Structures are given as C-alpha cells and as structure tokens.
Image 1: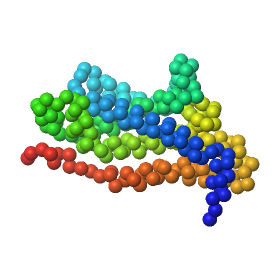
Image 2 (image 1 turned 45 degrees about the horizontal axis):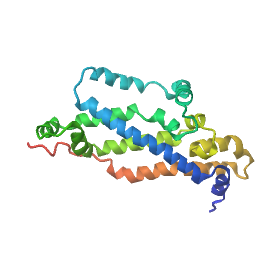
Image 3 (image 1 turned 90 degrees about the vertical axis):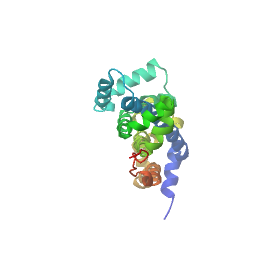
Image 4 (image 1 turned 135 degrees about the horizontal axis):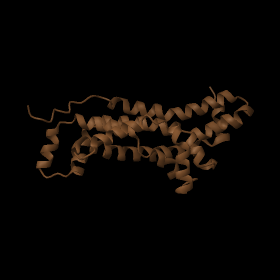
Length: 228
C-alpha cells in the first residue's frame, strides 16, 4: 500500500484547495435548492391560488429540458449581463433552483393530513409557522433525499464551473481532475493510478454522505398525530 498516487495528483492539482472550492460550490447549491425547493413545494402543495396547476405543469416541463441546451444562453446571461465571471456566485446561480427538488417536496407535502394544517390555522398560526413547525419536521426523509440528490450533481459538475472561471485557485475538484486528465496525466509516472486516486477523492464525500443519511431514509406514519 502506498500514497504515491495521491501525492502525484496533489502536486498537480492541489487536492485540498480543489476540495474547498467544491465544498463552497456544492454547499451553496444545496442551501439554495433546499430553501427554494421547500418554499415552492409547499406553495404548490398547500396554498390555493389561480394558476397553481399550470405552474406545476411548467415545473414538470422544465425537467425535460437538458441543461447542456441552456449552457450558451446561461453563459451570456451570467458572465456578460451579470458580470459574475470568476466568482462562486456565478457557478451557483444556474443551479440555485432545482425543479426535481420542488417536485419531491411537493409530493411529500401533499401526503401530510390536511387536518394538521387546519388545526394550526385555527390556533392562529401563519403559513411560515406552519411550514417551519409542522410540515418540515414531518418531511425529513424528503429533505435528506433532496440534499443527497442535489449534492451528486454539482459535486461532479465540471463543464459549467470551467466556463465561469479559468483560475486554478477557484476551480472545483471535478474541473481540476478533468484538466489533469487532459493535460498532465500522460506525463505522470503512473497516470492511471493518479487518475483513480483523484476519482476516489471525488467519490469519497458522496459515499460518506449516503452512509451518514441512509439510516434516516425510513417511512413514517404521518397520520399518527390525528385522532381516530
């Protein structure tokens, strides 16, 4: 057993710095996805307003549009119109709202008994209090599912961050590995070993997250709080 492959790739791409960049990028995407997904999912599931069905249909329609089809318009918008090149915000912004997370949260919120919400409104609770104190504690599996699914996408994303910044000190690990494979690996003493070492580093957080969360992916009796 040896750590030579890890030392070689660390000399080429700065594993620690790339991991920090990946953490900032992925953490920002997860935070925004969960916040906006919970708010949008709750509104589509529990609030009654004109056009709710059409809006949900639009959410479903967005899921069939490949992200790569939007790369050029997004690049022009984020880099040229907003001036967010070479910034973490420019990397995070296109992934801030995830239609899949909105769909997951909506479906979970729909499963909650209406009587819980009616009782809370009778007691004078507003929608924000109901969401925070009643709905969110009951949909913890949906939260964990959304976090895990959201994590995998940006953590492995290399094309969009590469377009936003060419600075090596801001590139996530996936971009650094892609650059290493394209430009440096052929000159390494053991190129395949170094590439596999980088892949292990990239995959380790996703595996650890799943192991940490897997025992929470359990079904609950969401009607247990009701009489009868």
